[in-house]
Amino acid sequence: MGEFNNNFILGCSAIGAGLAVIAGIGPGVGQGIAAGHAAAAVGRNPGAKSDVTSTMLLGQAVAETTGLYGLLIAMLLLFVKPLLP
Amino acid sequence: MGQGILLSAGADIDFMIHGVFSYELFGQTVWITTTHVCVLIVMLVIVAFSLAANHVIKHASDVPGTFQNIVELVVEMLDKMIGGVMGKFSPKFRNYIGTIFIFILLSNISGLFGLRPPTADYGVTFAMGIMTFVLIHYNQFKYQKVKGVIAGLCDPWPIWAPINIIGDIAVPISLSLRLFANVLSGTVMLALVYALLSKIAIIWPAALHVYFDLFSGAIQTYVFCMLTMTYITNACTTDE
Image (cartoon, rainbow over all chains, first blue to last red; front, top):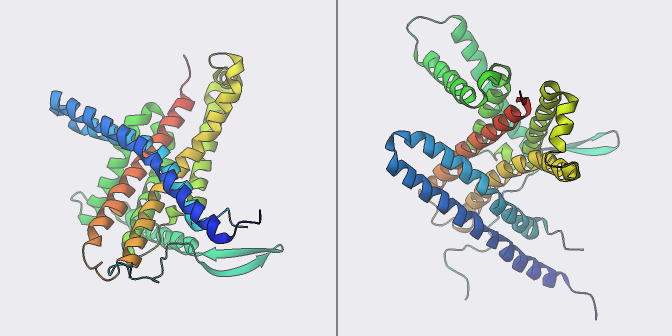
């Protein structure tokens, strides 16, 4: 078997980048759950709206981190191209 | 054939960091990049604002003018935010948290003014993560003493210590990567819109700017400062 050429590696990198951003599913579900519970909390106690909102945004931004790691891997594969010889 | 009409092929997608000029230092080539220039611009804006604020507050009047109102609003907002989280430790860390809050906020929204946001460079955010890391551990040793730090490392059992150490090291990395990746994703998205849809990108990218630069930037600033304050407060709190 000969060596793979660069186009093959670039194509595989693109597929890998596509697979890496599937990591966005998790934070999406998590943020949705957080937003849903925050909406329920505001419905039960409308006076605490600003506190609930800021807590929700903080939690959502922390939950987003795992998705951003997937995004970073995709960026590295697409633009830095670490796999090319 | 096969190419969308809207996608003007061959357009340059430009969101990378560019070198402005380079010089030799101890045999190493050191590049001054666009990040340095943007940090310098943001810093000059902050310095000018601070000098003006200092002048206004020194000659403060009983009936505040517009600028004095703005300065008081900013300081009171920061004080309230920091006091709400840090409690009795807030006077010591007000300067640091306020400084990084204003710096990160201005850096994030500098994308609106055509700069490449400095926080979209991992070197900038990692430096802030390192500062937070040093502050956390300095205060941990100062308030909890060596005994408390060792007790904290061996939290459930002593065999847990390596995992706790990894958790400590992960703090600045996750803190800085979160800010970096958020700002970078906005920068890349807008660069793609401007490069690939350049024919029809007339007015509507303003909505994207509002989301990616203003909303996301403000939220991430808040989150970075909030987490920094939480970690430092945890490090300062002793068991008694």
